[in-house]
Image (cartoon, rainbow over all chains, first blue to last red; front, top):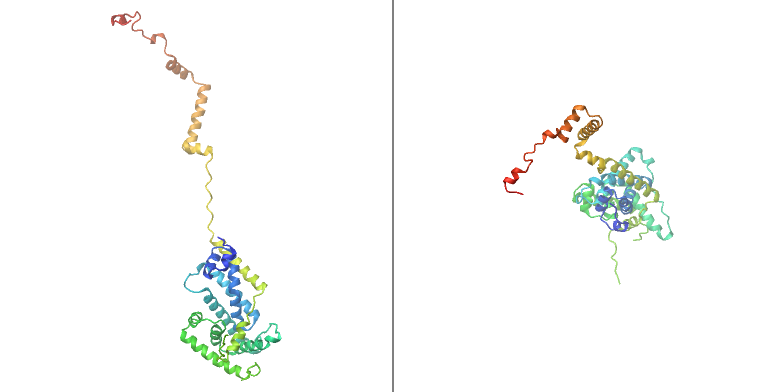
Length: 193
Length: 128
């Protein structure tokens, strides 16, 4: 069964997954186009490393392809499931990094071009990315999901498999730690007050 | 005129900056992921596709005839009977010829009895 590509663009993610499982070759293209940017961004924010983020994104998508025939419609959002898988894959890598030694951990990358107007924004993003890397994994994940991906606490709780109260606690502690970390760089980052 | 409230969260500018910094998947990554998708789909198709049932071929005329007469045993019986018929026709035994002549041609004039050669019986009845 094959649907016209334009129809697929507007189809719900779950329907696309069912179509993929039923053998529609176009469904994987649309799913990838719609999901990969989010998966890659989340992995990169957690890992601060482009190559590793790409590996994680590929692995997370591979797991999605494999789970497609068994997907139980209505039980979980596709994006929620993907954030969870991506988060778990990143956590595994971050834990392996600890065994490697701090000196061998790659520095957060900043491969973006930096036009003059964007330099301050880039500096702020880079500073936050570095500070997130110094947070405990769970705090960093909760802060990223809440304030970067802008998800609601109930969905974050589902992704992280914890209670909403635990999410609130993780986010609050993470933000306090980030504020303290970034306080020393406020003038450098363009805060004059 | 719109009014933008001042940010109360000192971290918000950082969050906004990082939100706007969205990595774009490159073509190579897209290609790898789509290749995975196609491979998983092909594997699944190969594993789960049931063997297609052989479409039943329609019977040919000969097959239909054979089925009508009871299949191969019926055909064998028919062939035997046919060969026997040809053999009898070509080289029939003498006794068979005599029997058949007796049945078909009669045993001679003595076998015919004329019960009223002068039509007397018919005259008595007032016929004719």
